[in-house]
Image (tube, rainbow, N blue to C red; front, top):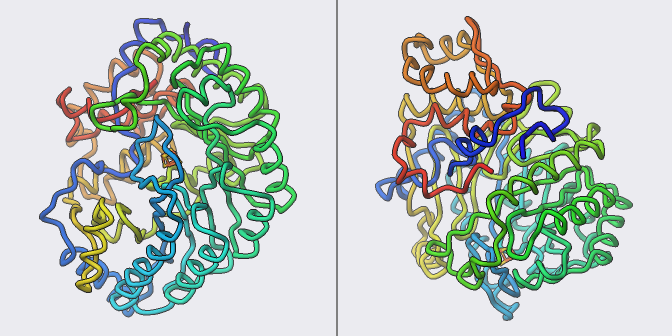
Length: 470
Ligand code: SF4
């Protein structure tokens, strides 16, 4: 297949060109990517970054914060899972976990001061709706006790439809949630059985209809292609069903089969996986299907209705990117709470302990549970600006980077311009005297364009840690 099946594509790529683009690559929710974090960056360094932010607040004010809370528990295991989660039927663990989060919030308040304004709050997992309604109320109470949720704050939650009811959604609205994301993946019964995640179309339809009636500002549906037992025909049915549900946003991820790294995936028989050709077909069908149904392609696996804030931000060149993917919020410091959560404060990234006992031990000692992270160098900051401009605006203006980083763009990135040449020949980017511009076709491969500026990605061994672009 060629990408000519995508309605907005301006150029057709040959199969050989498509294959050359189908390599593993990061999703660039951060740069440098999380695999570069080091253990030399720990609680002391993180505390220092928090204090610097607090000092900035005293001197001249700082932009509002973003907070991510990781709830690691799930009732049952999905075989494709690559998340940090704990499978348990013991719901009492939810309340114990809230006690740990309360301590972690207190430690942050001690450094930042009480009442930091929040412009973004996201609950992810695992399964945030593993918590009961009362526990979710308690968690929001803890967060409101430590931070100030600003009036226009984006308050979002990932919902596993198997753990939600209409009543639950109403409770979420009462708690202040205004954005919701449903994990759907695929509606085909054979695929659902093969990945051990059974949820009927009717039950999801009922929830999406209720979310719409409750006026959630954005309703997202997560899908995955490349799952076992999936075929282009079966996935086509899921695409049509999703278009019928009409969520305001769709995130379409490629399944990365890495059973050596992710134990649950060992339950998936490699023989059940679709071929590379079928995956390309499914991606092409999804792109064409969603665009024909009125969705706008945002970039990197994301679609939105033209009236959705994300599509408006894309049109106005105001897209940003953080650990949750694309966002309309300008870059702001992100505090990650909970086991394995990642934060970004000032010119640093940090990650909490990945296991519950380790996370708990640190908090019992009154220490922030950060176990690794990174203080960004000048070169990291420069490349981050370029990569994020490509991923979010699809355009890098040399002058703006030169002014911000005091460099000569052409001289500094001479090797990168060489690496961009084949992509320019394929029609994915246009290079002129002022800027590098990603073309409409290039948007589908924007990761490959961004990768040319990634200093750490030069060996194939490093690349193999990431999922494939297609
Ligand atoms: S995919 Fe989501 S719900 Fe399923 S096991 Fe992983 S974290 Fe839990």
